[in-house]
Image (cartoon, one colour):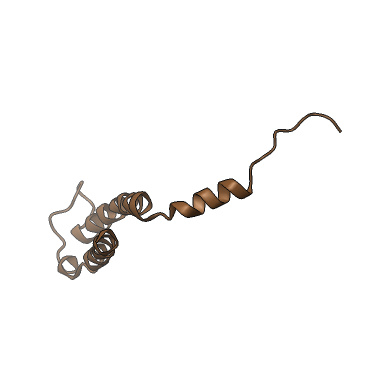
Length: 81
């Protein structure tokens, strides 16, 4: 169920990227110079790190971390040559 929810979230975010409703509107300008389409994409871009955090938090394969930690443990330098 968790994987299906994450896939649905990614597909929904992808669908939101196709913003056909802002292509012809020029007003109201955000901050006096940004058209609505550019403002939408700026906000969309700010939401991508949140989406990536959710994906890493809930879909990251923890077995990869355990495998990497068990195979490579860095040795502290001894100072002797």
